[in-house]
Image 1 (cartoon, rainbow, N blue to C red):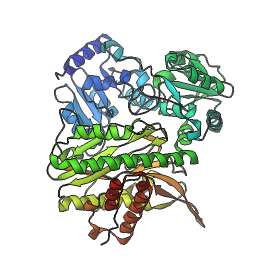
Image 2 (cartoon, rainbow, N blue to C red):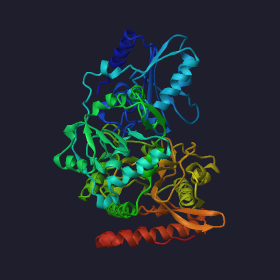
Image 3 (tube, one colour):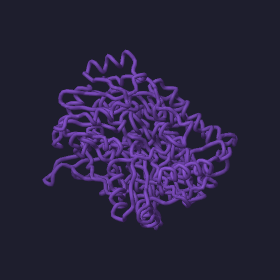
Image 4 (cartoon, rainbow, N blue to C red):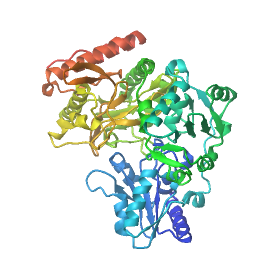
Length: 598
């Protein structure tokens, strides 16, 4: 397909000149700081051609003579390829040779020049940092440059999909209970009202969901205001059925049109102390606030991250259903692989169909990452008609996938050998597995943060001069987003400690560019371990139910404890899944979970 990005770039530069903008910074998100925004706000992808169904992390900068797109290590290979011929060049956000975007602006612009952004697509915190650093260097800042209103004539409309109620028997908490907890957090932060912008927080707080606003996530476009006397949902009213309207009335939630939010915050009484999360609220909305803003709001994300016992029990059900679908998928792969007719795209279609065959699965939790050999080394690879390859010969197949079940959200990665794996592949796979097991097995004191544990998963790779640059673990929502905070396991400092009831992924990997990729991912829930004279200690309990490929484990470099962990895990997988499988599937599962030894 012909790339028209050079035309878009020329039109943008013409528009910048007309508005006195010397450099424009283009966000990859929406007014809610969504990881994967609706199509209406995916203009940076449209402009640059750096795109995927799962979304791409990236921020672009355009000047009169340069066009650059920053992204992180998950997308380096993809971005280099997709940006060819678009006029844009890739810049690295992290890893070796990383360049800070704001530092680049300071170094490449002259005194008195102007940087423009659309303030509705940048967070308060990032925009304030940008404004301060530019101002310190005598560069002007304009946060009211909605560039896509000028240059994107066929821009998709905001989504209008209908909402539905997430069964409160599955959730285990009512809207009243959640909103009372939210207001307790608001009071703790010395505020008396809160404006929630993050879409996953809003879906959690209201026990409402939709299908289609955001790909692979059942959340919806809205704002939510709460104080001690008033609850207001700002949403396009076409999205509300009679049933949902009655549900909202039951919980005393007033409905106003989505676009009313700016006038609403302008008109709030001066004595209102409005809590706003500076990482999740748009700078453009903050500019409209007429009362006293209070920066904070992490408590709301924390409440969402701690799953109730009902949620955890139901997530167990979702993971059993997921394990059954994956069993059928990998049995099919083994059976049909020798024909040479399977391709990456075809496998994606088959896996989706197997998950959605269960009526409780509403969607996938992201577009599956199915990479054969060299494509497995592209961390966020997405097979297309142009990149699709046949699964043939010997090699490694990496499958990262998940489902959005009403009982919970799943996310799992398995790397399997088809044909005969090399000694190097087995060795590297085992290094990754050893890191996975070390993290899964650790006991830790209450108050521990993910960054303190991250090295456990990386140590065996580091000891051989090998590394991966993505995070080791992310929080997982409950029939919301596959990625959720505030907790994470990564090299960057994240202040949120682990708490009982949080669910996180465990996904170390290794990627040999041009050859193969390895990743092993399970979900884990944080549970109490024991109280000692040194305080309360916690532990991870692995929840995901699917075997690890035994043919890729080199037990000669594994300890007895690591082998015992694998055997215990596989016994749990077999015991939990076989009652749900056919006799043929049961025999396959028993083979895949046979005990191993040195």
